[in-house]
Image (tube, helix red, strand yellow):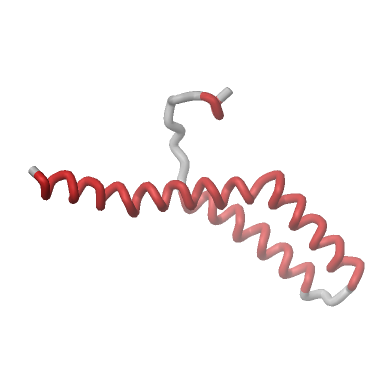
Length: 82
């Protein structure tokens, strides 16, 4: 229901990026073992987690960073015109 809501939801960019970092770290750790079967399993798991979870986490963080970066610029342009 929340995805169709106009009510803002508080979230932290750091939480989104920490989730991605943890998953990527787990993937690298498994991949470094050098066992081909483990490596293939790590790739499958990484792709699955990206499609189901942390791909959206990255987009959420990027959207928030974009808003922070460009909201100040629009505010400054509006105040310069007045």
